[in-house]
Amino acid sequence: MAIHERAIIEAVSGLGFAGNEEGLIPAFGLYLTKHFADYYNRISYALLGDFIRRAPELEEDARALLIEAGRVCSFHTFGGIMTSVEWDAVVRPMIESREDWVLGMVAVVNALGWGRWEVKSLEANERLVLTVHDSYEATGYVRDYPRAKEPRCYLAAGGVAGLMNLVYQGDITARPTFSEAYYLEIFRSPRTFAARETRCLAMGDSCCEIVAERDPI
Amino acid sequence: MLEVIQVGAVTVTRLYGCTRRDQYELRAPRPFPSQLRDRLEVGRASRGGPDLYVIDEPGAFQLTVAPKSARALMMPRLTTPLESQRDTALSLAGIVDELLLEAPR
Ligand SMILES: [Zn+2]
Image (cartoon, rainbow over all chains, first blue to last red; front, top):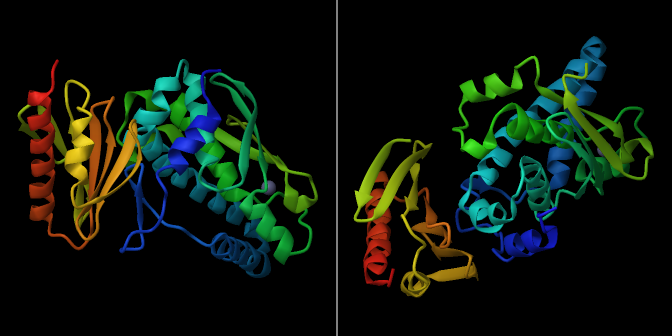
């Protein structure tokens, strides 16, 4: 593969992401924030807990909402990153195939401190299997809650589905505009990618594993 | 995309950011000269390497530059008025254009 993850991590880290006097991190054409992982975790798991207590019949819907937040996040964040000046300078020169877009994006994720993502297998246009080591969602969950019966990495699952959608259902290589219409076109298509977390640290597994496939449900 | 402005050889595209700030993309038909960083660094902070660097002026803007791709993005600070954001982008584009003219082809 042409993607050199270490070089990407070094180049991205070399930009020294830190908040400016506005408290924002302008990077990849986006305004990022340095955020407490625990804050995201607490509000996500509190939302899920509230659904379970107040309307247990909607538990699955709560999960779907949290995963959908991850899909929307990846549409804008991964979409922004893969069309950014930073991407053009660091990742694009390494790209030889459409699959490299996925691998390059995973390398950038690994510079951002969300845990360590590792592509286990990538079947072009069909399927991605990815493991996450030290997922911040599962790590926070394990610390604060009893062992889960279901996986808990909703943002990561939505993110992985979103990445596959950007690369294979849409066409990120053509630098699309990230409008609501484009989101609906690629994320509401019957051929859209959905992700399942098949192993999770929060369930006692050694790491998390996410499988993205076209509409597997 | 809100507007496309030509500054010599540099194409400046004004992109919608939010109600209080736009983003400005600068593109040129050939790589930005290496002297650009020296010019932009005067009185400003910079970080990154020769293939990708960031120029930052607190209270004003951040410019991310990919010189080999002949592409840069200016992200203004929220506190600056929209009109001055545009002026800053055009003045940065003017510097790029001037150096492109001076640089050997
Ligand atoms: Zn997990």
